[in-house]
Length: 454
Image 1: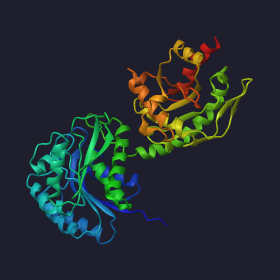
Image 2 (image 1 turned 135 degrees about the vertical axis):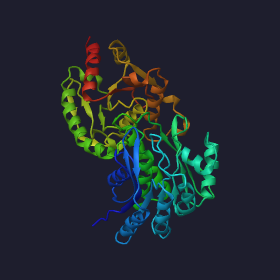
Image 3 (image 1 turned 180 degrees about the horizontal axis):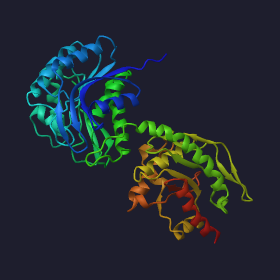
Image 4 (image 1 turned 30 degrees about the vertical axis):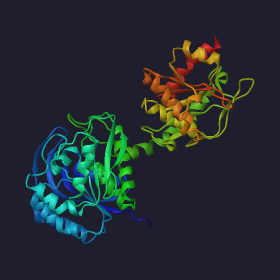
């Protein structure tokens, strides 16, 4: 029987559910761990404010920790809000004797701006907790507090990471989300190696409550599952980025990360396959569709919400072909990962337009190009000959590169309906029609087929 690793969180309770113990336990559970908890403080909190904090006695915090550790094997742990020097001193002896990796998130301030660490606790954190951390995960304000330096850019981050390493942790991850930049870059530092930038796409969302808690809990879960430190950090970054991209508004302030996003993705897979199965008969019934079927065959791809990998895009395992008499023939059935090249096209398009979730390959000749223009569909073009040399030879790279570049060069990438590929020797020209879903795709096909029929 597969044993689920037990992951311990030592942190405060967030009554609003978006951060603290609540965020940690959601993260641990969704990522496949068994969550254990030691509560260091109770907060009266929502998305706008922390209205009050009540802490248990340091002795009771120590009792919680002792009781858990003497019965349940802990695979990894994290600390969050430790609140006060007495609580830190009560917990520290148990952490000093640990036999599992420990992630320390030095929580100081809530997203709402409320202080979550008392002034006298800073020195206690430095003296008792930092030296036993396998990974320290401060954000920019926290790194500034503990190092006493201002951080304005990557060079400052690297110097701050060096200072933090001197305080005892085995590794440091300085989270760069507070810096103004196109991407969100965290910096991973370990002794005797140059700090490594770990880049994720920046997500424009007000739902940032609990991001630090979520990241550190995800890292601890990865470590408890046997990942090395850097792999655990990268996996946690991907999980948090998905949670931010799929976050939903809640309350009147900073909403929470969507901790259940991976489950929602998984649940959507059955619906995607059903939608594809129902879509192709409707496509086949469209008068004149055969005129748009490429010689190499047509395929239809549909992605789960927030897809960012080929195996999250389904297509037909065979192809849609057309006879000389205009009959439509369908081979195969809907499967995830069935058309990796078309999936790469769709994923590349989503980097410019996250609403794009459906793609259909079309024949491309002068008549189709003219019909695209007359029908009011917006096209963006790329030329395979312009593919950078370092990409050549990698399977599917030209389609991924070409789609991304075609949209990047267009003044309104979110308005593009079709990405047109001029082809090359041995590769026929094709267009890929983009849409938000199957219904949107059928609406776009109607005017195009009407123009071709005219």
